Amino acid sequence: MEHIAPPLEFLTSLNGLLGDEISSFMNSYKEPPVKGIRLNANKQACVSFAGDINDKQIPWEPAGFYVEDAFIKHNVLAHEAGCFYVQEPSAMAPVAVLSPKKDELVLDLCAAPGSKATQIAAYLNGTGLLVANEPVPERARVLSSNLCRMGVDNSIVVSDSPERLALRWPELFDAVLVDAPCSGEGLFRKQPESRLEWTVKTPVGCVKRQKQILTEAIKMLKPGGRLCYSTCTFNTLENDDCCDWLSSTSKRLTALPFLLPGVGFAQYGRIRLWPHRVRGEGQFIALFTKQEGSIGVTRVKRRLPVIDLDKLNIPSWINHSNQPCCRWGDLLVTVPDVPPLEGIHVLRVGLHLAKLSGDVCIPDHAAALAAGIQPDIALTKAEAYRYLAGETLTGTKRGWLTVGFMGAALGWVKGVDGVYKNHYPKHLRRVISDR
Image 1 (cartoon, helix red, strand yellow):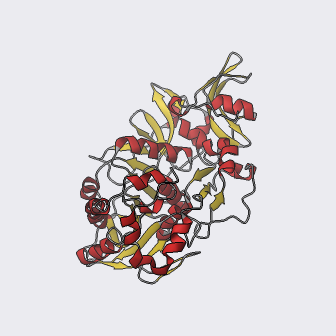
Image 2 (image 1 turned 180 degrees about the vertical axis):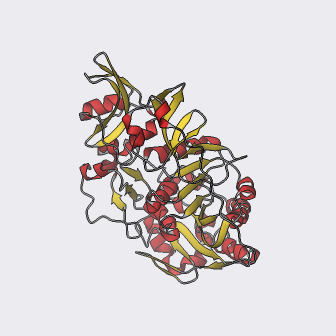
Image 3 (image 1 turned 60 degrees about the horizontal axis):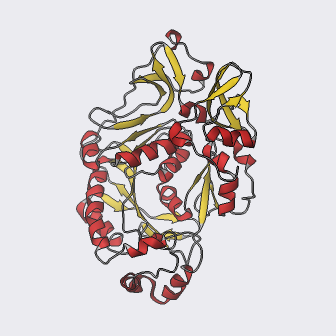
């Protein structure tokens, strides 16, 4: 599909933005798309990667590195263990601009599939709380799965409309990310087939939804907080015009200048990443801050009911977290203080430790992938591939055990009568082609 030419109307619309750089921009389409990963600092198995990533750091993301396809293929086990997240380099820039701080309450309003949500969690480093929202339930489940894989324990995943969330959480968040659905012009090199879907009317349709989302995002940002608006498109309608509309609609919002390493200084609080200027695809980023209002809002914090662990038949790994254990439905979870959840569709709360069945705990997959978990059983590469495919393994140990490869846990088995029964989630099982 690489032979598909960008729409002529699209190229014409860029003349005012690029001027005599249009030829350089067009030449960038002849280059292959750039790939990147973010390392998970909480998974020490990162040092076991097959392939050198030294001197390949992405300028705007300390944990980000440029890689080739071969690197990802050769490290598929480390990927499944949550040691890294595959993410397009330019897509790492919005969270770098938002720069979440320790102990902050952060909202990712359009979070699926989870690339930026897991990046926010890395910035929080186990402190504060990440609220990751995705209105489409199926996409929200993918988001939840990625947060699980990366071992995030200080987040909740919700699937609701921005309008409903704003009613429940007025002026609550220190920082809000709106990585809005857009026309995707910045991905034309990475996804050539998307060029066929673009028309001059595409940006117009996107703007309406973007403004709806931003209207609700403002309501949930606390005074003094930061709002980052980003798209993976180039046109002024969805970007500059939308930002101008946002500033004029909310007099309490002002642009916040920022410096993005490797790109430049955004004096007016907005910047574009172009594929002929940086090693990455197209991206637009704007940063705002909300001025103090006349009425302050009290931060609401709640904790789920703490459960008495002494009354449960649970394994010793249950106490690895510094957070109290709480009951959420039939699950045992750990979670910091959370905002009010009544009336909101919640998919995931904190770190899922176990499913409660009477007075018995059945370990949850997320508990094996949590930060700091060392596998009870070290698998060979061939055994690890068999495990990911759902096969039963042999062994002499008994009870619930974590299995892993090169120091990174992959999941659970249950040792019974000389075999390890496979408890890798069925929806994640797959046969790896290079095994």
